[in-house]
Image 1 (cartoon, helix red, strand yellow):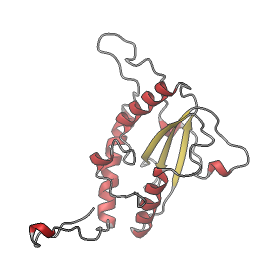
Image 2: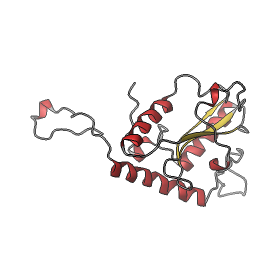
Image 3: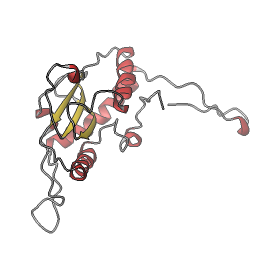
Image 4: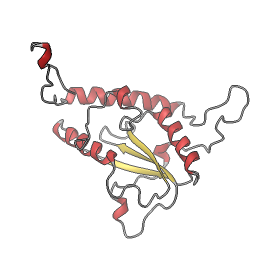
Length: 190
């Protein structure tokens, strides 16, 4: 978040240094996201039903509730044997608010679950900035990643399923949702 100095001349409007999110602001932001996602968990129905038939409109497989998937450390890709292989939809969670208050921060799709998180990834930058904010606001970062490895191997179907899940959960670090949540954690490299 940046603040414009309103008392300068119009030709010299400049942004002030980035405002830091305080503990109260962070908690308010987390609570807004959590409230939406908890409502979605209570009525979890990832498949969209057509108004004209009982079948799902997209004929895509139904993704299980993400918290029912086994959690893994974000450094899973460093393990000698990769725990996940092939096509997947993956979910990145923050557990810093305690059990029952997990925030789904990001979800993505991949054709190679054992390699997608390796190397550069925008979400890693957001998680780093978010983790620093958590520490500064006296919260302990606790992240996990979960994979659903029954995702379609067809890229179009998998991406359609990913978009369906993003619209359902509205994870704040996905680019499609950043405006909605006014995500204050910036990728410093962009």
